[in-house]
Length: 104
Image 1 (cartoon, rainbow, N blue to C red):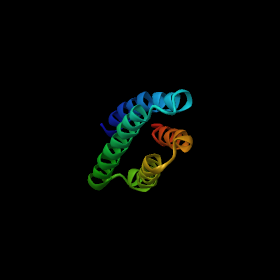
Image 2 (tube, one colour):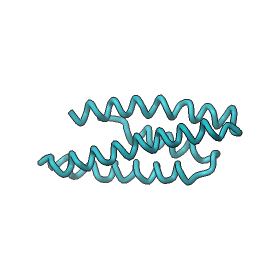
Image 3 (cartoon, rainbow, N blue to C red):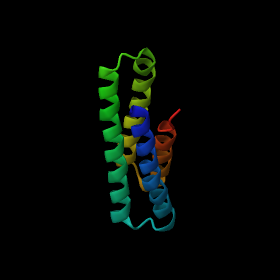
Image 4 (cartoon, one colour):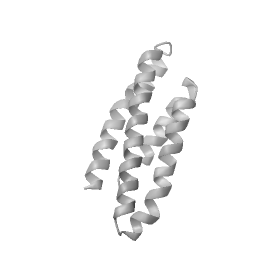
């Protein structure tokens, strides 16, 4: 159940990350679209954080309890970095989010 949710969210994130990076590279003055993509990505990461924390709290899975919190922490750090960064550093944060979302 959580695995399917994370796979779906990963796909949705890629659909926002790729255009964000393309716009930054080709139309850096298009701040309204950039802000919209950053907002979509941030909301998706926040939803993932909440859902993951719920799963950690309710699951009695030692592996999940051990491995999920660091990944959620990295995603949250990248979300904050993406929101606070300049356009030239946004792609790095966006790609780190995508790497963090790779479902194993």
